[in-house]
Length: 466
Ligand code: UDX
Image 1: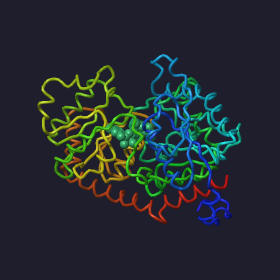
Image 2 (image 1 turned 180 degrees about the vertical axis):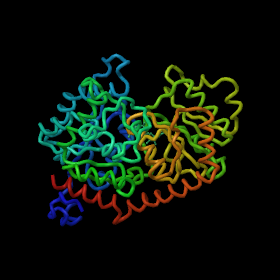
Image 3 (image 1 turned 60 degrees about the vertical axis):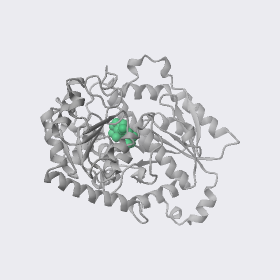
Image 4 (image 1 turned 45 degrees about the vertical axis):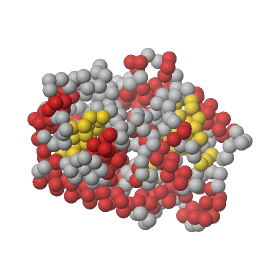
C-alpha cells in the first residue's frame, strides 16, 4: 500500500512475524498534557496488542500512574520544572522549556535502556511530535524514531507547514481577519495559529519550526485520524513528505475507555444522563487547557440557561483563571437551571458522548474531542481557542458540516441561538445525519480491510523491518 515499504516486508507471514517479534520492545515518550497523553497511551496499547512490549519514559510533570498499566514498564525522568518559576509553566513556554530541560535526562535514560543487557532489544522510539529534541537524541543513539501527531492531519498539512511562509501566505498583519486563504479553502486567515514569524524569539514559531525540521528526519508519522476523514490533507502531505505516513485512528475505538485521565472523572455525569431523555442533553467541555475570562464564562452560563435545554457542563478547576470553581455564578444562575443542568469538574468524556441522552457537544474543537464526537455521531458547537483547534472547527463547520461555529466571541444570545439550532432545529438534525455517516466511516476503517486496519498492518510490518 505504501510505495516506500520494501515489498519483501509485506510478504512476511503473520505467524513468522509474531515469532520473530517476540521480545521486541518499543519505547514511547508522551508529552505530559492530557490531550497528548491519551493518544500516546492508546497507541501503546494498540501496539502492545500486536505483540510489542512497551516502555514508557515520562516526565515528573503530570506524572503517569503505572498501576493503571501493569503491562507496561515505566521510567520517570527529571524535567527540572520544580526549579522553574510557576509563571513559565504554562502553554507554549512550558513546551519550549520541556524541550530544553529534558534533553540530558531523556538521552541518559534511553542510552541506559539500550545498553542494558537484561533488556530486550528496542525496535524503535515513538515520541510526540512536539518533543522535537528527541530526533537528535535518537540519531545519536542510532535508534529509529517514529512521530505521533496528536492533532489533525489538516492542521499540519495546511496551517503550519513552512510552505505557507515560502509562498507568502504568512505573515499577515491582522491574524483575526475573516479573509479567506484562497489556495486553501475554506480556511480563513484567522484559522492560522498566531505567531510572529519575524521574531526569532517567538515561542510558537520556534516550537513549530523545530518540530517541522526535526520530524523530517524521523522514520515516519503516525496519526490519530483516518483516511476517509482527512483525505485531501493526507494526499497533500504524501506529496510533500519523504517519510511514511500511518493514519491508524481513531485510537480510542480499539480500546473502550481511557484510563490515562489525570483528573478524577465524576461518575455522576453518567447517573445524571441516565435520568434524561434521548438526545436531549448538550454536553459542554473545553478540554484540559483552555481558559476563559469571567465575562466570557458568564455569557456561556446565561446562554446555556436561556436556551432552556438540559446540559452537562464540565467546569474544570482553572477554567477561569483566578477562580477556584463556580464562584462567578452568582445572581440566581444555579437556581435558574436547577434540575436542568448538571456541572462537574471532569467527566468520563468518551462515555458521555456515547450516552443515548447526549444530543450535542459544545467543544473547543481539541482534536481528541472532535474525533471522539465524530465516533459517537454527536454534532458540535465549536468555540476554538488556539493552535490546531481553529482548523478542526473550520472543518467541522464548513467541510464535514457537522457543527455550528461560534465565530464572533461568546455572547449569550449567540450561544442560545447556536444551542437551539443544534438541538431542536432542522439544521441540527441535518448535521446529526451527516455526522452519523462519518461515524459509519470511522467504524468501517477499523474493520478488516479498512483503511486504518491496513495502515496499522503496514506500521507493524514497518517497525518489524527496523
Ligand atoms: C490539546 C489540544 O487542544 C488538542 O487540539 C491537541 O490536538 C491535543 O492537545 P486538549 O485541549 O486537552 O488537548 O483537548 P482534546 O484534544 O480534546 O483532549 C482532551 C481529552 O481529555 C479528550 O481525550 C477527552 O476525552 C478528555 N476529557 C476531557 C475527559 O476525559 N474529561 C473531560 O471532562 C474533558
